[in-house]
Length: 133
Image 1 (cartoon, rainbow, N blue to C red):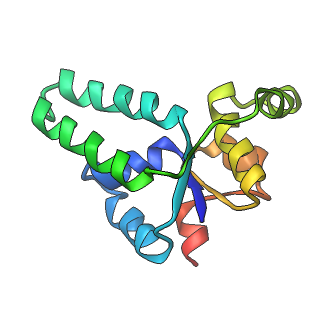
Image 2 (image 1 turned 90 degrees about the horizontal axis):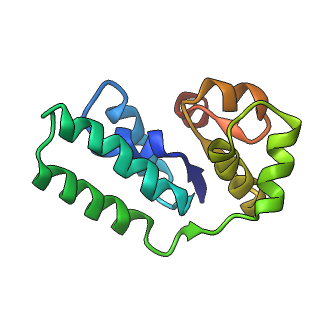
């Protein structure tokens, strides 16, 4: 099992330059987990595509449905104390620290493209590329 952040989830469902790499990640390790926060963040990402008429409402609804199915049973509440301790010792946002806290709690890696998270938590955070190699 790996923890994935919202960007990784978005790259899987929204076709782009990193989609193929993320599909390889899913193929290699299909057991993805995420804090419940991913849902709100994913909706926010999709809303930008919807408002710019890059995606239509039916496409966004399908993506949400597929993403929710992928993560069904693997969404977690995260300890506020754990998040705040991570936040206090670094420069990442509380949102980012939720993903780190979950990866630490599950004793696994967080897969992300976020440079700040990768820099501040190199022991637990991995890029897709580094995880695949």
